Length: 303
Image (tube, rainbow, N blue to C red; front, side, top):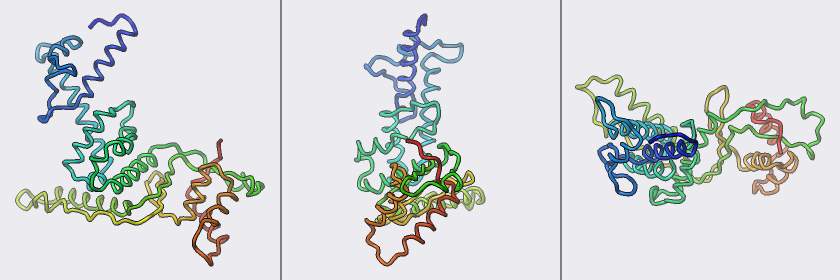
């Protein structure tokens, strides 16, 4: 294929991307047939040159296989909780189906899973019979990617807001902070899965060949999370990832602030909807705001 213009370059790029993004065969090889059923060898010859060792098909296959091995490996590492819920084999099939429909469109692999929750809502058969649980876990694990990579704005100081009345004061929340309302205890389940996997790695590193336990013994099954309505903040602090449980009223205040409510409005709305009685809300709210401020969650509000 000769490239003499931008439209021709675009055509070549589209063809190359289409070839790379096609799923591999069951034997992890490149598909022998193109999308229209024609020979993949003939398609490869159109835009890939052979060399003295490899045919055009073989050269293109290297890139096709490397792409799939890399993206599947990334999803495997980013979603251990979802893997534990649906099972290893089904997860790999799920990930392949997801990437076939929503291939990578970013220069960074950080964004690889950004449409996974959308895909699972479109294709819930992949997470049956634990649909709601799996969606909670997917949401929780994507929030960790956000917490690890998203921007950190300069925290707002007390002096900057000291003279602003609560009725007019608005506070922004850090972009890396995710506020999750979940129906399963996926935070504790995730920690249990991490501990299980860490134990497996230690066993594999320390045991001799003769004493190596069987795979089924090494990778014990973690009990699935129980149903419970919880509120969790996923954030980072000093470049480390944390999950923080929130009381329902605290969650409502933070969500109100994120939606643009004033501090006064966010607090009064949260208290008004609370079912709890005989609570010193002034002291409790002060404790929450002191905590959130020390974690650096507040920044300047931007419309």
